[in-house]
Length: 107
Image (cartoon, rainbow, N blue to C red; front, top):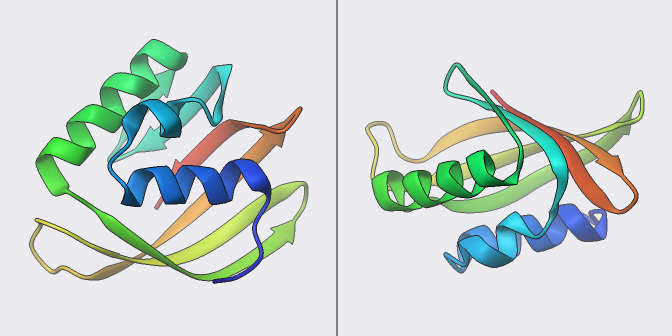
């Protein structure tokens, strides 16, 4: 696995362990997530998104590459789970603030 910032590494580890509480703790209270055409803001919305995603897809993420660009961390990952076309390659774009994830975009 590529060396990642602590919050990002913990997020992927918690997601793969299906520990939504630990995954949510990686986010800043005012964080935002953009996934599947939806913009979510705040920990309550993010916790709900994490729970729904786990139940629906049961994703397993394997980090392929990580790069620091323009103050963001761009991660390319192979994601497998309960969805058509599994596994697929997704791009995660993280912004960090004070050691927490402040923004995540999944494309």
